[in-house]
Amino acid sequence: MTLVGHFINGVNVDTAERTQDVFNPATGEATKQVALAAKETVEEAIAAAQAAFPAWRNTPPAKRARVMFRFKQLLEENAEKICQLIGEEHGKIAHDAMGELTRGIENVEFACYAPQMLKGEHSKNVGPNIDSWSEMQPLGVVAGITPFNFPAMVPLWMYPLAIVCGNTFVLKPSERDPSSTLYLAQLMQEAGLPDGVLNVVNGDKVAVDTLLTDERVKAVSFVGSTPIAEYVYATASANGKRCQALGGAKNHAIIMPDADMDNAVAAMTGAAFGSSGERCMALSVAVCVGDEAADALIEKMSAAMQDLKVGACTDNSNDFGPVITEAHMNKVKGYIDSAEQQGAVVVVDGRNPQVEGYNNGFFVGGTLIDQVKPGMTCYDEEIFGPVLLVVRAQSMDEAMQLINDHEYGNGTCIFTRDGEAARYFSDNILVGMVGINVPLPVPVSYHSFGGWKRSLFGDLSAYGPDGVRFYTNRKTITQRWPSSGVREGVQFSFPSN
Ligand code: NAD
Image (cartoon, rainbow, N blue to C red; front, side, top):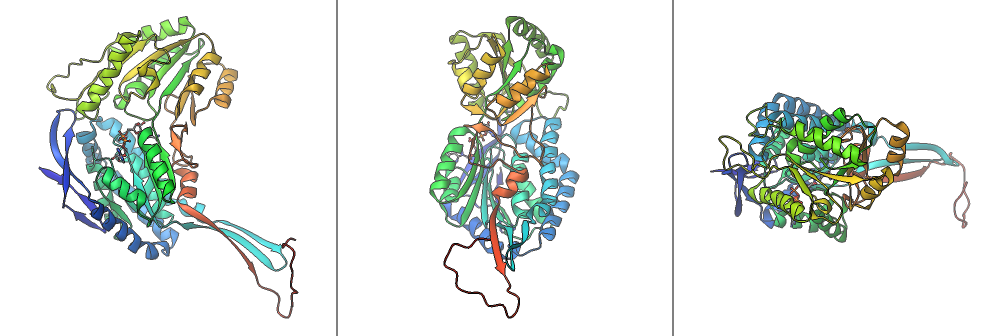
């Protein structure tokens, strides 16, 4: 069976002390094995990154960016292969994998012009013959730890920007779908990146803990579930590292009585069920204001769901594929069971989807559940599956209160024709990324991505301008060159102009 190994110091490392099966979730078969790095292997990767840092730090930013221009080209040329690798291990359909890759390439494009953001600031004559400037210096070795659901895009949020900022990088991707991530690192080498600047170690908690505690690692970018994000943030911080840890979500959409219901249903169908709901920005709760809006939504959504096509990634006409593992499939079905047991009404039931030819795949069909209330497990927790919950509220304020009271604050959206309501919503909702008639308000690469509350631990969001701040240290230099012959006396008071 093929072993997915590591990429350290420009070399593919295929040794494995421990391994884990990688599945094709559409067939349910174990198709590969992934190496789970020992502490020593991770330390080797950190050492390679540490050794590569001085020369890379002193490489002109434009030259660092030039590697990304070539990398972008290679990503585009090899897009089909990348999407295939994603599909085989994640299960997402090729059109969806292409969407992921395209958003990842946009982050590479942003990294290409990051030198523009590294210029710093300059002030002449802050005092007599004194000039002052601030510059952005790289941190050193930076680590990235990423989730299964975007094996190409989320790593691309991190290392292209970190590397153009002058850092070297150790990436620990998800062990559940590692092949596309590893392949991208190999393309970086083909693009001309010097050995050791980007290293990939596959692994589990052993690898993560080594990255979080090794003093040579200066900063950690994490994306994954909230319990692990919280752990990573606490451990990295306790070990003196800068850390940004993006966690889970429960994204609500408010459907106002005046919403264009046909457009809202179309938008929500893609946002709730696309990628089997395994997106941190997936819409998982529709909060309808008034029973009339709720009844209309249920009627139109149930009809739209009759046409959902669930299947393997190899058929590009499918809408979405399987979930990632058998355990996760059972967990998602368990949430639907619990909703029923706790008094909600399952309107469309995806617990037993028929996917011809794929009887052992990890499939869950689109599911719609009405009469959901806070306190039910399916509402309080992140399901991360193709399940849309409907909550009925009697006013917009009640709907907004539900969102503001929820522990997560990643994304949200309002469907309305009323500009005043939309403005009030975006101004007062306690969520980091807000859509107005836009169901998946994922910021483009030149903004930054981050939730509020327990969806993000740390001060800076991912990628974009916040990414540049995260991957650099600001240094402010104040310099005096007195005119020749000028003598300056001793001054004991605090210097001021
Ligand atoms: P996960 O938390 O299980 O894994 C994320 C990473 O942490 C992986 O690399 C994994 O190997 C590692 N990890 C897992 N358990 C660990 C442990 N006990 N100790 C140390 N490291 C550990 O997340 P996942 O299931 O791969 O991804 C899905 C989750 O990620 C969802 O909750 C989703 O909302 C979230 N997510 C968030 C964003 C965001 O931007 N906020 C984006 C994508 C995914």
